[in-house]
Length: 202
Image 1: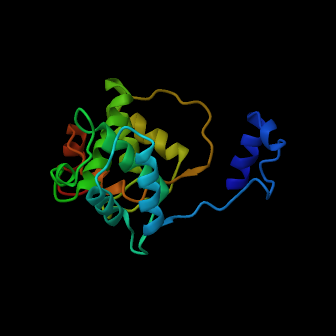
Image 2: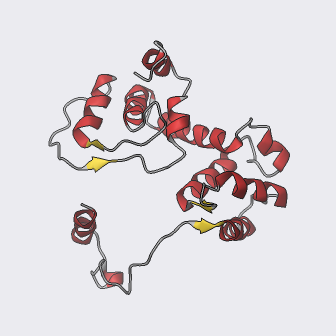
Image 3: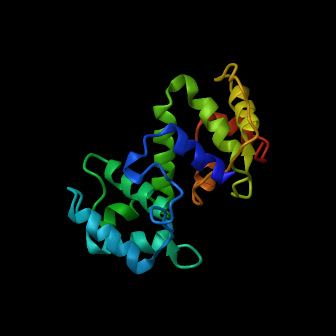
């Protein structure tokens, strides 16, 4: 399945810069998770080039909170949390004190705020449909079940925000970010109260 997506990109995009060969071993490289030391270095280098200067204690806390059970940090999660740090308040969060004021689990709060902003960007008319799709990509155990496009369209229609969607293929879609399921299932919007009013997920 992944090869099909890669080949579609090869067909649709202008890839002259890589000799129109997206599968060339000289071009592809392994994207792995960061070690804790690498994650800290990445944050330090990025903040040096930006207007948001994070104090050392905050950087250490971020790395610790982002570490998984293997003591590694996923680049995508570092990107999401780092971007949201800049969006918090008027001038972003730059101190450990301000970070801790987000709550018991500051990292989860940042991810939650990021999700809510993405939903907001969908527009008021599409908010319920967007939440329904996200709910479909999670479950009560905070895992990420793989869903087909047809299942996602059904979820969106259930909220009344989507009409006919044309052709439906059989590709499957998982929620890509490990730390997203819990914030999604705990969102405070009215649709959550309706979906979980009986104590269960649905």
